[in-house]
Image (cartoon, rainbow, N blue to C red; front, side, top):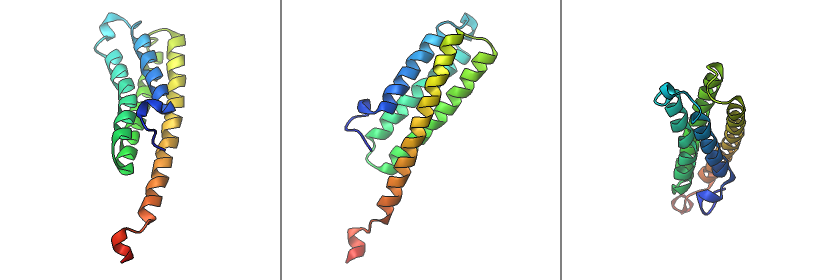
Length: 134
């Protein structure tokens, strides 16, 4: 499940593409949105690959699953903010659509990763410890 390095994970690569796309989208926002919705979009987008990377670097499956869960939350936050930017007609429509598509795909991959990590946790918890075998 865990790659030898987070950069090898397809979900991390997709999340990085999403963050880049969000920065490109927000570059077209009006100046008065620079510290408003644009900033929030950027922070949520950066949080996704950052949490994937941090979780992947953790030593336990439980911690990894927790960070993937945080990334999922950031992905939902980002999707909400992208939908709001659409309602407010901020940025280019094509850029918003691309970002929303990437966000959906990233969220689906994160959900599958989280489910796999949870299955691994269940398996790990069923393995008897060396102390209990004595």
